[in-house]
Every structure is written in C-alpha cells, then in structure tokens.
Image (cartoon, rainbow, N blue to C red):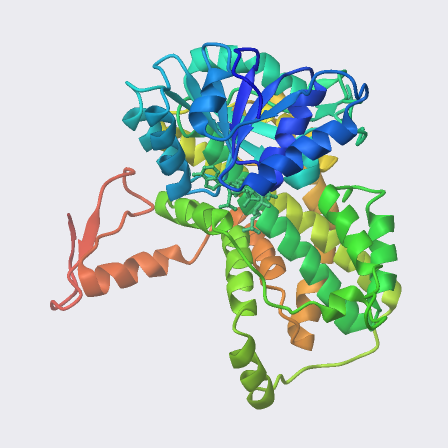
Length: 507
Ligand SMILES: NC(=O)C1=CN([C@@H]2O[C@H](COP(=O)(O)OP(=O)(O)OC[C@H]3O[C@@H](n4cnc5c(N)ncnc54)[C@H](OP(=O)(O)O)[C@@H]3O)[C@@H](O)[C@H]2O)C=CC1
Ligand SMILES: O=C(CO)[C@H](O)[C@H](O)COP(=O)(O)O
C-alpha cells in the first residue's frame, strides 16, 4: 500500500468483475485510480493486471490499492469522485455509510455504477443529500465493455454531471459517424476518437431506469434468439453448429447485433470434456438477477403493454421448473401436425420473425420509458438513448441507428412502429412472423415471445378490439360503467342489468 497523497482522480469501492475492468479502463485514459475492496485478493488482482499491462514498466502505478476507505479518500483530489461497483441493494447503502464514516464531504460525489433499482437511486439521492452527492451511472457491456468501452447511462444532479462528463465520455464506447462501434480491445490503446456512448439522461433515478429498460429489452432480445434457435433445431433438425453458421449469415444483415454474434459463436463451441456441442451440455434453467422482472413490473404498474418483455421473464421462470417439466413431459402430450416444409422457407420465416419481434420488443421498451418520464418527471431524449446503446452495451445492434433516426425525425413519435422505416419493415417482413408462429403452434414448440410480438403488433394496429365486451362484462358484475361510441369522451354510462327492460343511465 502506498503513502497518502492527493494525486488520484477517482476512487473505486468494489474491484470485482466490473470494478476492476472500469478502473483499468480509466487508467488507460490517463486517470489515476485509488481502489478498495473487502476482498484483498481482488485488490491485488487489479494491481497485478495494471502492472502487467503498463506500457512503461518503470512508470508510476496508475492504480493504488488501499487497505480501507479512509486511506482511499486521502488519495483523492477534491471534490472526490468515488465509483461504487458492489452488488446492488444493501451493499450500496453499507458502502455509503462507510464512506460517511471515513470522512466524505458534502461536495464529494459517490457514483453508483451497479444495477441498482431506480427507486433506490431516488431514495439515496434524497437520503444522502446533506452528506455527499449521490449520482447514478448504470453501466452496460459486461466485463469486456467495462474494460474497453461500455455504454454509460448517467442520471443525477446536473452539476455533478458536468464534473463527471469528461471522464465518462473518455471511457465510454465510441461509434463512428454511421453509428458503427469503433472497437479496440488492446490494453493501453484505448479508442479516443468517435462519438461516446453516454449522455446525461436526467435527474436522480433516470440513468438506472433507462438501464433497467435496456435489460428488459435484453431479456426479450435473448429470448427471441433462443426461440429462433429452438424452432430451427426442432423443425429442421439442424445441429447447433449449423444454426451458429446461419446466425453468422443473419448477422451480416438487418439482424446485425452483439447478441446474434455471440449466439453464433456459442452454438459453434464444442464441449472439451465430451465433444458434444457445448450448448447441449448446459442445463436449460435460466438465471435472472431482477432487472428484466423490474421492467415488466414497472410497465404493468404504469399500464404499458410490454408483453414480449414480460413473456421473456416468464420464459426464464418456466425454464427453472426442471423437475416439474420432466414430469409434465411424460404426461402431457401435444397433438401436433407434421408436414413437409422446405428448409429454405422455414429459415426465411424465422429470420423475418426474429426481426419483426425484435422491432416490437424495442417499441415496447421505448413505450415504457415514454410512460416513465411522465410518471417521474424526467424528459428523455429517445434519440440520445438509442444512440448511447449503439456501442458498448449488450443490446448494441445496427438497427439502433434506425431507431435514433426515427426519433430524430419526430421527437414526439408515439411508437416506433409508427415511424415510416419500421412500419415499412413490419409490412414487408410480418409474413415470416406469422408463419413462424403458425409452425410453432402446429408443432408444439414453445415460442412465447414470438407469439406475444405478433399479438402486440396485431393488437396495436387494430382500430377495433373486443374491449367493448369486456367493459360490458365489468359493468354487468360490478357497475364499473362504460363510455359510449356516440357520446362525449369521458361520459360514463351504466346499464341496470338486473332491472326490467335494462335501462341505461348516465353515471
Ligand atoms: N457482471 C456484469 O456483467 C455486470 C454487472 N453489473 C452490476 O455491477 C455491480 C457489480 O457487479 P460485479 O462486478 O459483477 O460483482 P462482483 O461480485 O464481481 O464484485 C463486487 C465486489 O464488491 C465487493 N464488495 C461487496 N461489498 C463491499 C463493501 N461493502 N465494500 C467494499 N467492497 C465490497 C465484493 O467483495 P466480496 O466478494 O468479498 O463480497 C466484490 O469483490 C452489480 O450491481 C452488478 O449487477 C452491471 C453490468 C454488467
Ligand atoms: O446488466 C447486465 C448486462 O446488461 C448484467 O449482465 C446482468 O446481470 C444481466 O441480467 P441477468 O443476470 O438478470 O440476466
């Protein structure tokens, strides 16, 4: 451990997967870091990596390891900036308390870079107001993203943002003028040109909210790719490697994205122990840490239809019922239709289905944020949000540039599906989604997110829905009233269903 002197630009609490990577990223951009972790091995690990990666071994260390928070604070220039990258929830509050005890001051800025729930960020900003400035910055991109350029989603007090902005813009992922990521995964050689994938998103919980929705979309994107894989495997009998190669081809077109790219790679990997495709050796029971579920809950609370995201959360939940599913597989049969289907047609249908369903999932994600800005008094720039997701994050995809263009053309766009570009895409490709859903239904292959995407598309484009009958049902059993198509909007009516002649009166 080094002697104290105030020559570090930024402190880190938590040097695990994300903390270590982001600290090294900052060091590559010329910032000196003082770091602390409860686990001393993690501190030593980041110091060893920094030393090994340092271009000039005789130069001063760019990261300093500290034995406690007090020592860490003593190394930092004022106002001090401390990044917290510990598990979300109670550990974040524990770190905040320890920092106060260690001597944090009112001007100091604590940046929570974890996947915290946005309501916690709002609460913490208010709770610690007198003690220090609590600022949220959600990070996406996993370990590699944090190391070489993540997407950063900052939200909090605007003055703190001015102070943090140069640092965040330096370490964030960069894209070129066409929105394509500029990547360099070489330690010591960071990308310095291009547009940074970060933008101030608003006060208090705005950054963490946007990251939560990013993850909700991530859940949907991943589930849709898995359903495409399942269909190709079950309908056409393709082996994982073959599907991986097909995904590689799809990745050259409109589906170009990080998630399709890694899925292609994963499917071509063989297990070193058994020689079987690795994917076949992995238990089909999906984990989740909560962000997708929070997105679905938030959408439901605000009354936003986000079925694809919710179905993706449920699909993970259903997958964990391993024992029950085995039991059911032996008892419940599917009355399926089989027939000759041309492989080429099926491939085309599934590719189109994936594209259409993906458009619908992103439309739902942006709808959720549209509702949230009203609910929490934020003012989102949806084009900026699409732009900062073009590089660095897990859902990075070529078509985010098209989303940014759509919102640039019309800042008030109510739904992505209404933009000319995406309306046209849905018009041209929806046949594939319809075919894929029919094939899945006929063959008994579960594709909940494809089904949900089609239902959303058809529901959204319907000027008449059976909600009239539903309103009548509500009025029948609960006198909940209804509006009439031939009366002023807002006027409520009730039919006295139990009375003779069933008179209708204004409520
Ligand atoms: N991994 C990923 O791909 C991504 C993670 N995130 C989010 O980033 C955050 C950090 O995740 P990740 O880096 O993966 O987690 P890790 O578990 O790898 O690292 C967290 C580190 O924080 C340490 N820690 C916990 N409590 C304290 C404390 N009170 N004081 C000091 N150190 C502490 C832990 O030590 P110990 O192990 O001893 O408890 C651990 O070393 C989480 O909110 C996560 O959801 C966000 C995007 C992507
Ligand atoms: O935030 C992330 C990526 O953007 C994390 O990887 C997160 O853990 C993913 O969520 P889950 O673990 O629920 O799949």
